[in-house]
Length: 177
Image (cartoon, rainbow, N blue to C red; front, side, top):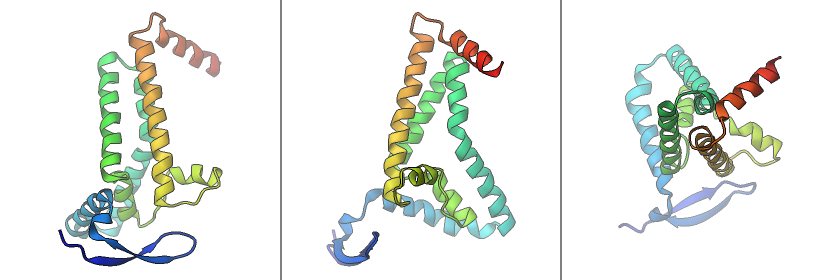
């Protein structure tokens, strides 16, 4: 492999210049760049600005609401659909790790021309800098928590001796009354 050195600017409060080899560039970033290249060369040139805005807004809306939809599936739907939901969330998390970030976020950024992420609000609350590293770390913490919670719900609903679904429905009715 070619060991050419490149000058890269490190993102931080102070910009520093240092040398890294091509091998030091993260694999996830390279994979994400392939997605960006496909978007930039094949998809975006054929869309009008209005189409980009419309599609990007729909993707962002879906992206922000998907965890809540999955949560409803885990809590109220039959076992076979909950099992599919667990598989879906594991595939999404695997994709997130593989690409070292969310492909839907890349699509949104390219289509809408801004870099807004649902995690940004949480980073602001935690008084952390909004950057890719912090977004990734917080997203992974949330993903592990989400998966753990949903597998626990799966176990309680389908393998525990208590009738979990009826208790959740009772709780919802109590809260709504």
